[in-house]
Image 1 (cartoon, each protein chain N blue to C red):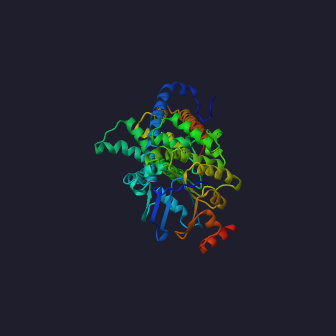
Image 2: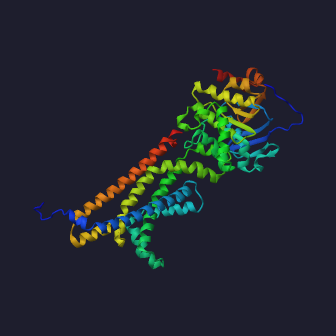
Length: 229
Length: 250
């Protein structure tokens, strides 16, 4: 099919570059999955510290959120990659990739978890106290499972953002999907083909992630939820 | 109901000149009260009179500003907090079940995690207690699948799991639809008949009369009058008690 503008969509170009694109996809998935998991963990720790006003950790959490939610992720990636070595911390690009996603997502998840811990019904916590459950058992067996239920939708949103924003990692030449595709564009000018592949692949991953999250939410909703109390 | 008095028996609970403030507001103003093992003490009084606060001082859900409460002869402040609370069960107005756990797990979670008692042993006892409150068939139900009355009966069974020496009931029927109150009171009545020491804050005057060994009338953070239910509720000697009873009869 020829085009008056002279541009012909060449599906073969995608096919030819499939091995590199697949390799890029693996890197995207690797950094995103690790980044999302670490971001949830960071959010859990600082979110709880902020909700329960744990001395020191609360203040560190507050400053951390202000810094990482208040600056563009692109700036954070550049800083971690180019500025840290000047401070004597030299990290591999793949480590910077995971770290950047984890810190950025972690700042949002801190707020997600903070709100969720605050939303845990005080009556349930008081009942646990009255049964003689010490603080650490109350946290693990009552507050945490209830907070996770509350936080799940917002954790899902942040995780989707982390996944998509892994595309920014291309600026430090981390060989993830966007980096690979834009390189192909630079060499062969297959702009439309490559960006079509990018859009379709990210969309597919996000839909898959959303579907997984909705399954978990539905599973938990079949049991008691906080709103039912 | 048979109430046995033994001369030598020390009260299970001795409240001595108890004082509690919320800011400038004196909520408890020198409370003295003895509760004997096996006794059912019903506390009545207008809202804001300090009934619930008194109850919550027993298991240290509220801190004490002055005076003391002795439980089994020992100051409640000398107990480790969770050890005291394992000996004193409490049931709340809003049930406060754990919404993410089945009725059975609501009962077993505390003993399983605190004492690391095996799940099978806990569940056997939990099923017995659920049967005792008439909810054997609801063991697998989540709180949102239970009526208010059923939730409150689960909450009572949950408190009994810890084998407390005494049970505190804080307006446990006030959040229930009228037709569900009876089933909860029936469970409490059964518990009283089995000899449990109970302190009950309630507006259910019929329950107070029929199940209470003693009625305590509180107002303004003080005990105004106490005695046998018949005497306090039907023939009160204090003007404030008379006024209160007239008001709630409408």
